[in-house]
Length: 430
Image (cartoon, rainbow, N blue to C red):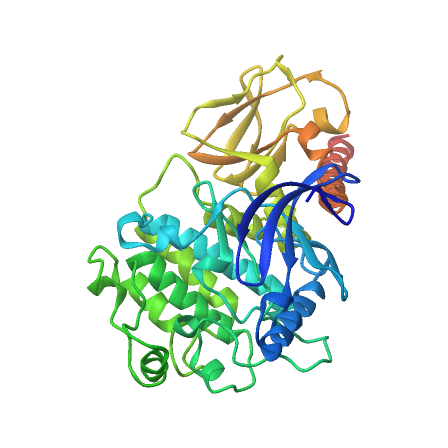
């Protein structure tokens, strides 16, 4: 098979009972994609075939709807009597299943960071009216140290979709009590399933040890799971508490919102994980969201800022910019204070949220730096290359332009006040 529709088949990536996944090339956009080709004729049960077709229709309805760096994008779908396939973003990685095995567990901080990213992705999906309903390690793609993408939205509930949803879907071990009882579902069912996924990622074990689905369902409904630290003693009480709250059977005591879940993970990482030279993405995202410069950026745009920026830490009294050097990179202070010096004389102090070096970028040419910038305290800096920024999405570029305008207007207002004071002092002295 050389082509499916307009897509050129490169190789087979894997196959299951009702579908085969290929690596393919989209010749129009010149990009690699994952193409899932469905064959419902292999199902000997017409009811099962209808269910799988329903799943395909549900996921196809999300084409172009969910645009988030931690959700697999759906580009295209074709559903008819002759051929049924879906075209998705190609992710060169594996699922979280291997990292959920006892002999291949991740460090606690990395596991918490992965779950944090899942929280933010599913919070975004909820904002778009989508509940996943089948969160588990097999549906979370993983590459690098902590980069993830959630996939397989076939079982999702879509608020804007008027058709009847297929019930009884999901993996029993990861299903919430309300999902088992086929109650109306909210985002809290995904919170529960992500709690189970976190349990597995931390311990390599499921919270309930069952030999069949009936036993599993009974335990989910009636038995409290052991603390994760029972299987992995180095897990601290704070992390135990996060997992068990996410998995609480009573939705009144479960996390009410994704942001609560995410905030507890940030607090755990900040307080319990040893500082590293590399800054955790949880810290980066939380920092960006707190800085006035990024006030109008959406969550998706903040993830893009993280992707295109370089974060560095400097100790007190380290030189960051040297007068006379050339360059167009600009910097935003994430934490700490820097001194701006001219021939050794202090011109100003800049604090968290302030920007410097941007005039070279705004002038659109390499120019000589006119001041020295030296750290007054330990600082964390966000460095941006204008050439990389030019390749960012239109929305992200717009937000940067808007932030620069606000910043320049604020500086102009401050300058006007200073000039007024100087003029007033001059008139008084005369």
